Structure formats: C-alpha cells, structure tokens
Image (spheres, rainbow, N blue to C red):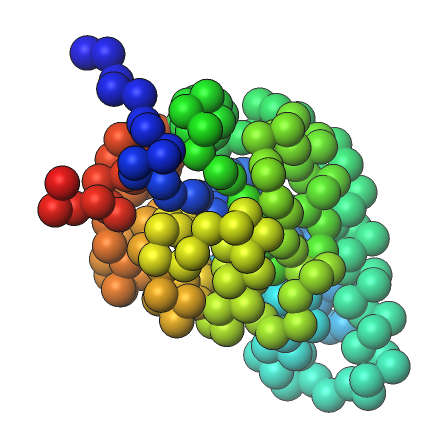
Length: 229
Ligand code: B16
Ligand code: MG
C-alpha cells in the first residue's frame, strides 16, 4: 500500500531522536569501557547495572559505578577516570559502520526527510557527532542537541526543548523517540509526545511502544499528534 504524503503546512510536526539505544546500539561499547574501568579499580560491573546507565550522562554514570563498587574518589580523580573510560569508548566507536544502525532507522529517517518533516537529535552523549558520522546518519538531521550543549541531564527536558527551539517547532508538535526512562520523563516534562523504544514495563508513560523503528511510519507518527483528524 502506498503511503500518503504528509502535508507539512496543514499537519506540521517534528521528530526528536535519542541516539544510543534508538538509532544505534552503543550501550555494548559503553558497557565494555565501563567494565574495563571498574576492573582496573578492583571491582566488577554487570550488564544489569549497565541497564541503569542508559540516558545517564558520563559523570553521573561514573558516580553510580563508583557507588556500586563502594569506592570513593576525589573530583580530580573522577575527571581522570571519566577521561580514561571515554578514550577506550571512543576507540571502539571510531570503528563503527553503517551496518550497526538499528533496524528501520535509515528507512524512517529517509521517509521523514523526503516528506519535509524536521528531524533533531536529542542525546546525552558528548560523542554524538563521531557516532553519526561513522554510521552515515549525519545528513538526516536539521539540528543536533547533545551532551556538549545541554547543562541539565535527562529527566530534565532541556535537551528536547532546545531541539524543538532549534527546529522552530512548538513542543506540542514534537514527537520524541526514547529508550531510557529518564528520557521518557524528559519528553513528558517538555510536554511532547513520546514513542518508547522498549516496553510499557521498562518505559511507563510513553504514548506508543515499538521494539525498533521498523515498527513505525511517518504516518503513524503524524497520527500521534493529530489523533482527532
Ligand atoms: P558519552 P543517549 C547516553 O546517550 C547513553 O545512553 C548513556 O549510557 C551515556 O552515558 C551518555 O549518553 C553519555 O555518553 O560518554 O558518550 O558522553 O541515550 O542520551 O543518546
Ligand atoms: Mg538512549
């Protein structure tokens, strides 16, 4: 069935995508680098613990890991540890390819772009530009808001409200795609619609749930904003 094209003058809307866990799966690289760091300090770090770090910024993640390991460090020592972890992580993401883009991602971004829908990134990561370049996704984005330009971490809505402002689209016409509970809460706090990439159990409060972006079309997204039409 042919998809109807979206008229952006009568039914405008924009999409804001989280990066890690929505467009690409970099959680595996974060896990390897954090585990190596924890082991170097003398304790272990599990995949279950890594789940709690999704959407959480780098310094907050380090604080949580040190807390789990029962280790205290000074601010200066934490800076060194965070930089070490990031060097290991960047070495891994520098080898990423377009094959690591999650299912349905490129197709959805292409369809949205062809239909004139504005697209932004809303990520906690300070490494988003490397990841987008390596996976050949950069050209789909009209605005990039990441950990380099926001001061308040999710669940604060700053990352998404900044993205909406850069796109010149009001919050109530924005749909956020998120795989982390902190991100879903941030989108709700920003008064935006939110698609949870996960389950209602993991991500309570989202307007719709998908396993990945192959399960949603540009028309479905428009329907989330214009439900009564
Ligand atoms: P970096 P997202 C988040 O990205 C990750 O989910 C989280 O695990 C990570 O700690 C955070 O980025 C910071 O990443 O160390 O690269 O700045 O999900 O908000 O795209
Ligand atoms: Mg994420």
